[in-house]
Image 1 (cartoon, rainbow, N blue to C red):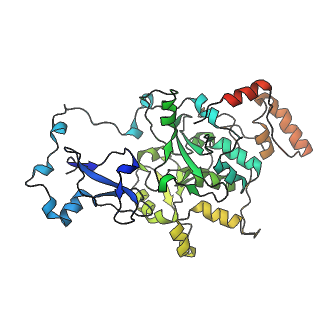
Image 2 (image 1 turned 120 degrees about the vertical axis):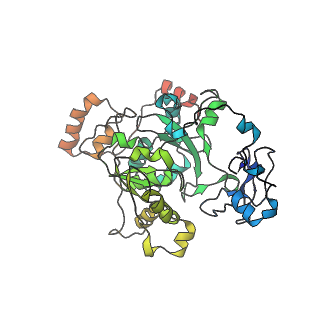
Image 3 (image 1 turned 135 degrees about the vertical axis):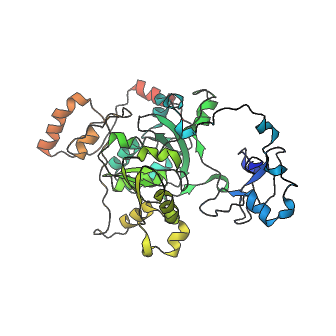
Length: 400
């Protein structure tokens, strides 16, 4: 049966059906691979996997509707076009592609979108939580980009410093809540925009990695914490930079891309609605020591569960509680000086030195660090020189 019926390939949201469970136009139907016809309007999978989770596969549909099953055993056979294919090795999973076949985004394209001004709506939200120096440190650590519409670009940078892809999301700059277009259209990615403008070839294909994976090389001594959303990883790093915060990109976005975590001690903190799912999944995950914790416990309210809170929501709540004993005090994240080389970054004794080091040559840092230590200097602001040439260059930088 797996050969005869398959989920309809994504074309446009108008082709989706109304989900029988949540009444949203989010149901991807199963179609006949021979005719392309929809099996039944109720037979499909809802895209709202956390909020709805509806999934009626053909096997279950036929159990409920025996009369709809094709006569005889013909439905079990693969379609003719599949049977006639020549024998060939099975395609390698995307995440298991050899290094030579992995498509990467050119560094110069990515760097053009990583700007401190203007600020994306997500970075504006970070401004409501942290000191400007902390926000700048987070922008650099996680390579946060910006589009012309003020959306944030969460780039996936692997442990070898290669940019595998960039997820485009929009956030409310005050509340920090994700703004979903058209009632929940899937996320956009930067590579189709780069293709459209001719920056990368049409044959470019994305092989995803864990968000924040590059930090494993830049800060190998830090304990690793795995969360679901990119936003969660960035916010939590602002509060607790002593950890490497990585994100899967979603509740079920797991699989072979997590193989990079083999050999690491990893603590996983899923969203409140995914605790049991992750506990079951990682109990069987081979080769990696990933312990799933439940930071919510019995203290979670019904409202928390309805809102599907995560660990970042808890940290923000404690931070905004106004109770100094319970509030989390953010510190300036140290910023890697050697980015994308796969080597540990140089770190200095003070957070001030680490921030200053971004703006001056490395050979001058010993003297500068000594001055900072001798005079107990504090960093008041960071500014970049703006010559006329630089201003012209900045204005010409294309952004998605």
